[in-house]
Image 1 (tube, rainbow, N blue to C red):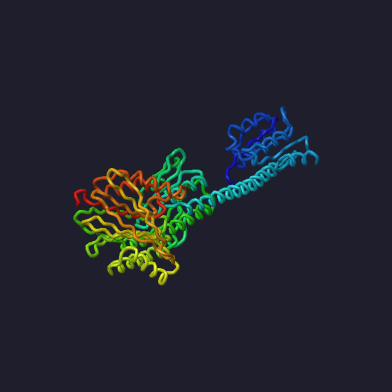
Image 2: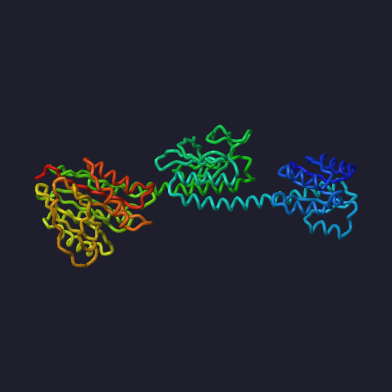
Length: 519
């Protein structure tokens, strides 16, 4: 038997002495009480250390039946096993009442020592088996909640912290969870009572482990990120899903584990599966963003009398790449400026973006004005990409005169800033690309010396929880003043308008300004 502590409650000193002697010789630790009141006081003060109550039915202050009933209805000690013993209440009615009011066994005197010991051991076996089952059920419920939390985490750091917090809730002690990023950098998340949760760089010495999960016991010094209890060993679960991946580790107090470590194993496997999915997504997202950036213009033309600036920011790590693009190219003495957005967020959207951008450049090289270019690109899309749609704003600018010819295909209105007049939106009209509809004439105007024109995609101003007019108003207010440096101006727009922790859409911004000395 596992060592156990027994509370013996009997007002007879002689009988209490016998019960204590028999139980002590059998290896039990025994605590004594003479009355029901003192027994309940002992339970209130040290109930967590008591495993079994041996309770006389006839007590001077209250009956053993009442004491048992109060123990069994207590929210803390209600699962504590109770054995009634009696020399007086020995008939069937008494035994029935005792069992009906909560006792787990009923012994009548004269009691044989072996009978008392065997009954105590049997009751404790049942009690501990029930306790293990209830603990396992509670842990499995918390494990399910933790698994949901780690699979809902948007980042690897958040995933590891959710795992550490969940392990702390499951096992009730300090935890450390370690995994590597897609770049091979170790991260560790910790959770413990009274300490601030944290994710920090941490390098663990990997062991040669086969695919699967293992649990081993280690010294606390190897996992010094948290404070372990004195003389506590650390149970470390390692889970590995692929031979070309490093394992993930979950370290918890060894004393919290049940035989076979079933919950710890499952938790480590759940963490490993979530980390693998996160690594794969991060790798795919990085490849897609790299491809998308390679399709965008890397160098701007250098034009006397004009200052140009662009900004492109991909969506957050948990969002698929989009189809935002821009183009600035000199053609026959005119600056061609285009900004557009292909519908959708995926690698496919990025490839469609590349096709549309190349089509715009090809038709513009032929010498068509902006409106005609949009007509031709629209025909191209409806023929080659009939299931796709896109918005596009296209203009040509003569650097020497500032003459602008602009056409729009359902894109957001450009913003024109002129000193003394503030920032105002232009109002070009036109159906988006992919729709067979008539297109209005091009918008023509003069960009004055010192004037700044801003083109952008919807990621700069659109938010899920607000109307687009709110974003347009915020953009106009933010662009009321333009810095001497257009790069600084574009950067401020990004910080002020899209400075969220995790942006949901790509952002492209193009700004161009005529020199204030231009004639």
